[in-house]
Length: 252
Ligand SMILES: *[C@@H]1O[C@H](CO)[C@@H](O)[C@H](O)[C@H]1NC(C)=O
Ligand SMILES: *[C@@H]1O[C@H](CO)[C@@H](O)[C@H](O)[C@H]1NC(C)=O
Image (cartoon, rainbow, N blue to C red):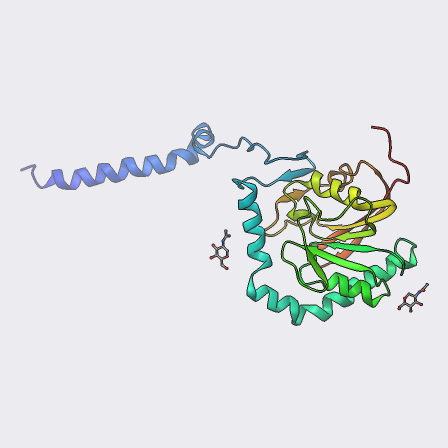
């Protein structure tokens, strides 16, 4: 009688072939390579994608990107945190950064100052606290009276509007070259740009680019001279870059 064996043999053979199939990728490296997802880098979304700076893929349109950014900016839980628990601490830390910049002659009470991606305006409040009265913030969502509405890829300000611009949202730029070109356009000749960036940390899920070396951002400034690069401890951002827009446009 062979009949009872067959139903047992079949599942056994099935199990055997299944386990071989599962083991194959571990045993044969060529199999593993060919079956893993394609590692060809996706075409950069746009802008200056160098090995030092990578644009994150995945945005299907500019609208899509803006919607994603708005989702963080409009998150009611985050806005409540920014307005309450975070407010004093952030204003205090920013005020310390700005008074250091004042003592180094990079910012003064008379500076017209812009904070890019200012959320509710903590940086602006800090500038006011250290005596820079003519300071304004800009973000996708306005927060009057400190923060005006504006997209850092197309600032709503005329050329040469500011003496000083600060931002710690470089990682949110989908077009980092546009982000920097807009800073250089709206700075007056001799004006100072200060960016806080992360070099040794991955941004959050709202970051649109990843910066791997400071030259990835410095190289985007076409009309400015480097003042300095230094270490900071700024809410997860570890590097402060300071540039000064040239007095005369360079011939390019
Ligand atoms: C925006 O955030 C909400 C939760 O606040 C989430 O349900 C939604 O999927 C998000 N949309 C996008 C486009 O990320
Ligand atoms: C700048 O403003 C601060 C705060 O209002 C004030 O204490 C300081 O004296 C001012 N500095 C100059 C050089 O006017």
